[in-house]
Length: 308
Image (cartoon, rainbow, N blue to C red; front, side, top):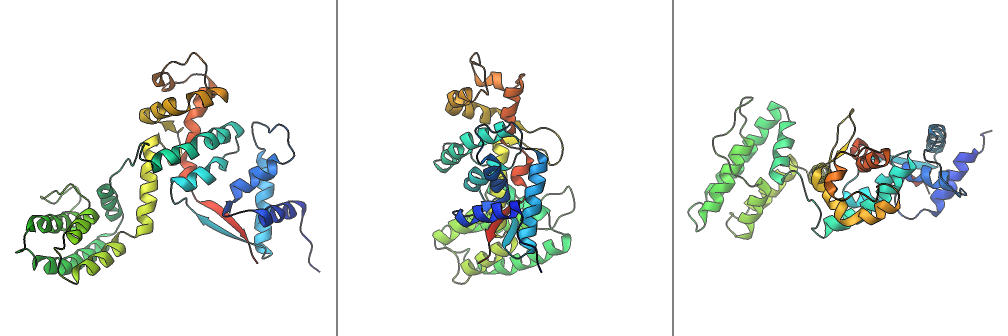
């Protein structure tokens, strides 16, 4: 005879029954920890975190829930789920206050934007591939390039030449520390789009270019790199060691948009006069600002849903 559900298992299942939309374990643990508390402690006990995670895994083993481990897709998701990926109450409050507003600023084009360009991400993606894979990609490109060359006699051939040169410079397999002699400071994708919009490509080439690009630079991978690029615009994040540190432009943006709310939360002293004062904070409260982003924002999250 199987045992019934434990207390924490029942709490998790009850909360999930009422949850609206996607929910992470990190959100679950804070929601259940804060229930019925008039004052939330500054630090969530690690024992509570461990106990609840054990209960969640038990629910999974019993067939009650599914757990998907994945990274955040974009800044909007980060504003929803990332604030809870900490055991510290004050850091969580900081993120809950700032991140939704930062997401809106980015959506409106008033944030810091991407740290790396699309062409940087293309080069980075290729740098992670083995030499054999790179050679196969280049041979595929040469086959498409032969079709592009058929249109070189048309008006506006300069754009096609840029596309060919970009493909060669980006995809040619060179020895370490060597570079292709021609440099085109645009992404391959932007040149493909420009040529297609101009109607300059032979009939079957747009389809072949689209399939080629998705094979080499998958859209999901592009979104992941764009998200990382945005985070690196705001902070210097170390993979394993070292404290995170907000960048000067990020601190200026926070100063302009969040000074009074952060002052109200007790993060800053009233005598702080300019964003420059925030670069080398001394009190522990001011150091906490730099925890707005840390390496865990790029780590996998546990997304949970009930079965049935």
